[in-house]
Image (cartoon, rainbow, N blue to C red; front, side, top):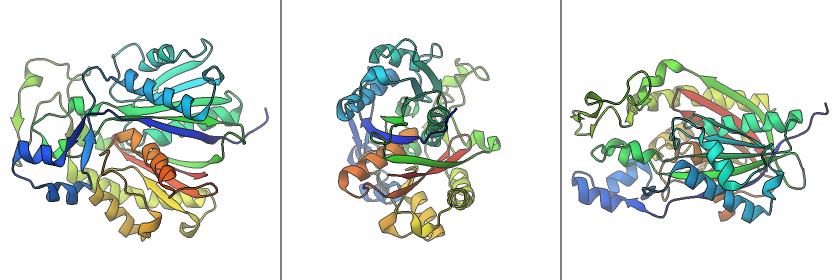
Length: 341
């Protein structure tokens, strides 16, 4: 079978209209200032999903926007990949629900995969493999979470960081449609760190019960139950600083590129402090490094494609540019690749 190139044809996104601002948080908690929140996180406001805005609703909206903006016929999609940690149901797959909402062909496959901050890169990996192998002409990759549903209102350590949002990316083999050629990948996993970013209850290990609903408060004044998101900030920070720089080196080597040949570095938009530490460690100039989370917060698997599209819209990213993307976080899991726009 003839081997072909795979490329990003289009990226779209959809964010909930409701916002949680730093002023809202200051008025509620009273212990932090707006400036302190902004300096630590790099965030001014976060989109928050409404009660009726589920993964399937927001994912469908992002895909509909992609079809509208790109002019791609929905009947041309051969495969739907949906990355989410917050599915509509335990079963069936949310991808099947989105497939129905979008009216895709019945011979178009659809599947969910559960990954967090590295999810977009893994999605590109699977989509590009399908396209390069000839198994698909066009793959629709949807990413996103309604993670704020699992953030306890009394936990300012996570409430200040996370926002909800979904993106849709079309990966295609047709050069005239897809200028953003996808390069070689570096992927990695360290499951020993799984407990540092986790929702402890709700699965088969710890089903929801009265005990999992008990509220506890840590020494920093953050309250949550076992049914809420828990993040060990210092450990996650240390993981990123330890693992990301060598991942970038391997990605560059695998693609035959140097740091100087990358026009733009787009990492998972975790927090401002983490991104700045990584940028300084790798000595990447500010003008070639994206920090774009003031209006979105940390949108987990959507943060990279969201940053890519916003960089295109602002003129910071243009045709012919070489972009290195890197996702890292929950799992621990990480991945990186290069895109020729």
